Length: 112
Image 1 (cartoon, rainbow, N blue to C red):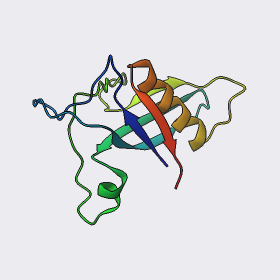
Image 2: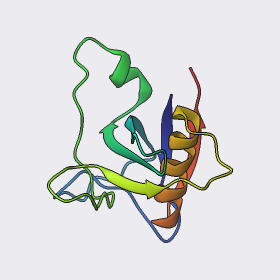
Image 3: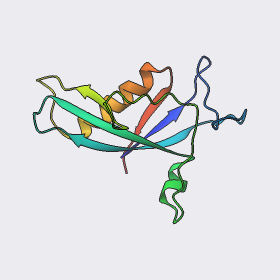
């Protein structure tokens, strides 16, 4: 599973340190389900497209999408899991979707 992240009128996506604007990017999420059951962390990796991710090269790209790690010493984004939420990868992907939407992007979950 991954996320298709698209710019909005208010929030554009550019290749890092350029003016090259992207219509969308494909984001894969590495997930960690913490043993306490209270937290989920995810580490996003950005690709130009799903096809680029599936290619033999699989080169990630760097953009100006705001990815701000909040875990001390790690690159992951830590989120709280609500007690009524399943403790699984689907919940983690949904949490990642919400994270990018909170930054101002349109986001779709891409199920393979």
